[in-house]
Image 1 (tube, rainbow, N blue to C red):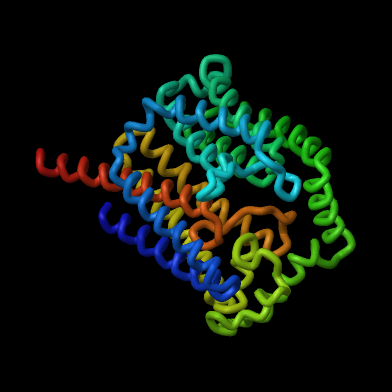
Image 2 (tube, rainbow, N blue to C red; image 1 turned 90 degrees about the vertical axis):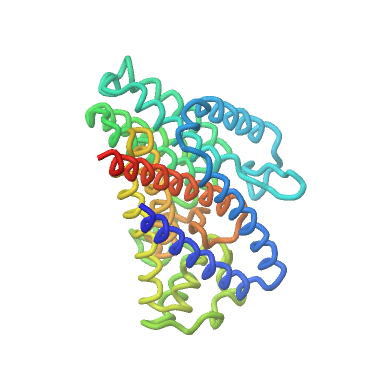
Length: 359
């Protein structure tokens, strides 16, 4: 388990260093210093959560989730609108998105509930409905911020965790079908998401790019060739590609590192998922297994959506690339997630060593 932890930490450090380099080249020293400050804070919370025994979260998961639901409600009611969305709370020294914390807290509580309910998760009335209550509450509040992309990540991750936890496929497919219909109708009612969806559909039916951002993103990826232009030599960051340090950072990486460099980054995220699966498989309890799987899946799924948007195969969203994009809340939350994963691996390793000694 120590080797798995070391591999995980090494991959994350590589991603952070590469991302920091792109941010410096794309936005200059001021943004770089701001990002490094977030990285230092993220390292602190990583160490903290790597030391806290993960079992402690079971007893407080409900209160953590209720607390963040309260913050989400306050965000909807009082947070100022930025680009048509009320997603951020300003603490003065930094802004944060409560929805990012909600993703982790919901995973923790679902893992605790699935373990608690056991075989009752197969029963809708006595098990599954309690979990759907929490998923519905969180996703609805995030949706109305509005934040359709995060809503999608939370919903999909939650339902996959329920399936892995033993819920009946019939129940889940029936619920997911209804959720897709309601979610699609709701997304079409929101002006910004409706425009993104319709332009994406138009790009498929009539050809062309989804929008200027995606066009410039494809140009960046294509101009990188096989081996890239070299770190710091991106041409697209010079006003051509908006949000090159954040929502489209993978496109800059593809331009600078080329096809093989971009492929290496994708392999790095896949490796995080595989390592997470191995940690989940060896965890000594259902809660640890489910939590490790949920965290690993969230990271790789977020990376997949970010890359898919840059390639133009999904509607444009504001999903960051884990550990690489600029943004305080994102890197802090993903660092907390990795800290929890490392703790599961560490305590599982101690348990296995103890069993060997007893034998």
